[in-house]
Image 1: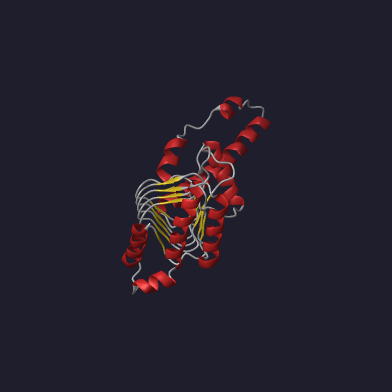
Image 2: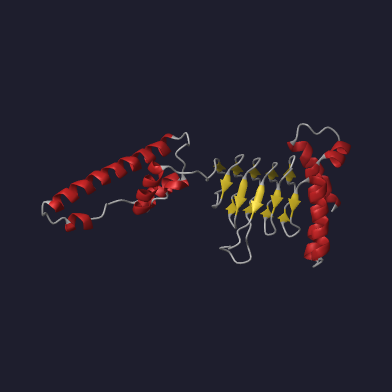
Length: 251
């Protein structure tokens, strides 16, 4: 345990230029306090002293504003900077040399796709920015960076940089685009229309054009049917489109 404490002290000086003395870190750094108390709480948890482990965890939350479930597995040289409002769930696994900032949530899903696993796994050297939410039994690859306020609900490959969030209210044009994308099998809302990315804008432009074209074709077919023309074959013909490829290039 003393080795872990020394490592946790050294990592503060390595990653926080504001740290000046050991005494300052020991007395004034809530991230250091939270990790120290978690060592105790996790040890009790693994020894089946569940209530006492939760009590130690609760005291740590009261003192630091950082909530770490005693069941969480945290590697060596992890650094929690500031930390207020950070929540780390029971089945979370945090690899060595990770860095978390304030307001981070490593949360779980009630209906887990992996039995007994509801919270994320962070590989070595992952950085999670302030306010980011990493939700569910997903895996974040080694060296990945999660931007501030990002919402991550899918696996992240090693070294990737994840930015932006998922939640947005759609207007009529967005709903039409989404409906067309679903017909084509394309996950349009894996990307957001307000992202300043020319590829994203181009894809949304193509989807918008497709919606308008479909509306025009439908109007023409109705007119022809009113004139007695059988358009059943034209209606049955499907578009030749590879949604898998489009999903792959924008995910």
